[in-house]
Amino acid sequence: MSENIVEIRNMTKQYGKQRALDDVSLRIKKGSIVGLIGPNGAGKSTLMKIMGGLAYPTNGELEMYGATDERGLNNARTRMSFMIEIPYAKENMTAKENLEKQRIQKGIPDKKRIDEVLKEVNLENTGKKKVKNFSLGMRQRLGLANALLGNPEFMVLDEPINGLDPSGIVEIRELFRSLNQDKDITLVISSHILSELSLLCTDYIFINHGKIKGIFTADELKAACSEYIQIDTDNNELAGALILNKCGINRLEVTKDSGIRIYEKLDEIRDISKILYDNGVIPLEIAKNEVSLEDYYMKMVNNEV
Ligand code: ADP
Ligand code: MG
Image 1 (cartoon, rainbow, N blue to C red):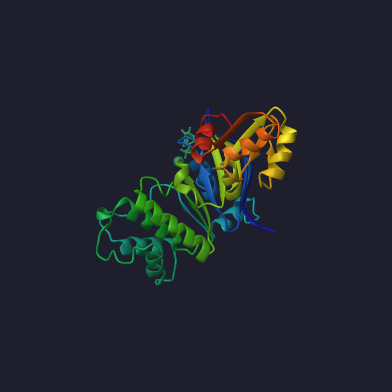
Image 2: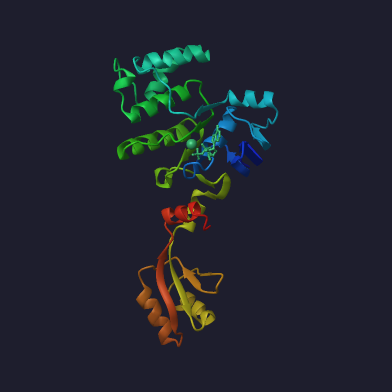
């Protein structure tokens, strides 16, 4: 059984007349990498701030490591770290100096931790370079190093990939993967660009206008976005039997409008039509379709799903 680190139940957050979260319920499993995906203004930061204790819900319940009361939640927050605003660092200081300042502020006794986290985020060779000369990717990684200082079990990262160039994105994705797999850290990462997080997350939560629009595992999202052949004929019952018996296809799906979907032999449309036709079934529609991740996301953003 997998343990939930966070559970949010029927949460609403109102800023005056603005409803930033509307009846949100979700769970974060231990060991997962959760992508919180939604356009600007969707409510991502609000949700993360509430987890971090930087904002409070108007209604609903937050449970972290089994605690729901404020004292228990604050205790749970010592096992976590949050990178919610743009990482703050002193421009005239080096990476090491910045981290040393943070270490003292956070009361972390272990001085060795600084070299460890610099190594973990690949900033160990920045030496005397001051933050003002850092690229955006280096700044993001310094923010992560800071978030790692206290050896968190769980990290909440608000748009950590925002503004990085493609090689920076690849690098930071690798870093997230290794934090998750090698250090066993559970991650929640927000983004308004789905493709930034695809192939990384184990779970995806889509949010828009403060409402949860969909929760998927990576496999479910992959299945929802795969290629298939859609078939409709004048006799779908017979067509189904022919597909299974004569086309070398092992599995088919009958869709709501009683059409047929197959996920194999996607390049054999002509052969499949011929077999159907030769056995007295008239194909009315037979076409390869694809629901791409981005199509799905755009539909979600536009409230079509
Ligand atoms: P996201 O991070 O997904 O871009 P936010 O959580 O920042 O979204 O914002 C969700 C909604 O709540 C937006 O409409 C935003 O304008 C509003 N909002 C966020 N913070 C505040 C605040 N402190 N005061 C008033 N409205 C806010
Ligand atoms: Mg935000």
